[in-house]
Length: 232
Figure (cartoon, rainbow, N blue to C red):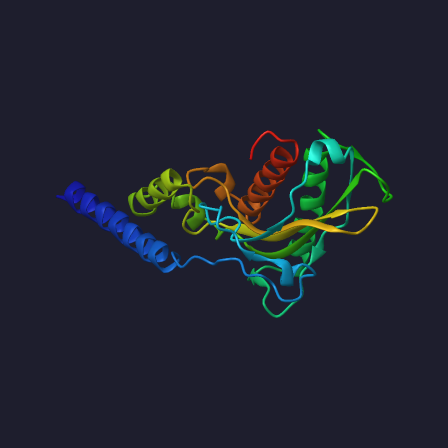
């Protein structure tokens, strides 16, 4: 009798937790989309990116450039934290913004230095990379990780992973990349990007900034691959 009662209570607690998590997942399914931020220097040149099927880079501008033959060095500016009214930081502290901005410069520097010599001064053959952190969301403590194990959140995230979309209740990062010829100042390319880890990446769901940092690493890898000609 006692065992049956305890079993029922355990089942009931599990059901309550699942329902609570399901409610949180459904409530968190509204997807924040990047904007062509008005106070960004390249804003007036950006247009909807018709080649982007992932939704990660909805706005872009580009000129035809052979990156590997025209440029041999890269100059990476300190990351700017966007302060415009249309910024998309969701409940993230100034300290976390600064930490993410520093991490972003470190990661992009590390990746791009694989194919380009890193320099501190503009000059011929130097590509200038300007990064602006425009938004970020932290992962909700405990629930973010639970979503990967609970039937309610887990099934949703499995579908999202298959579609290449973001997980429920985990963080993301948004930023702008602007590419200039360092000698002339000519704008060669720009894009607004939203990055996040794979929806079933459990490690990236633990820690407030883990998912956003995973997104930064993903973005740095993606830019490096495109500039080095390894991916169109």
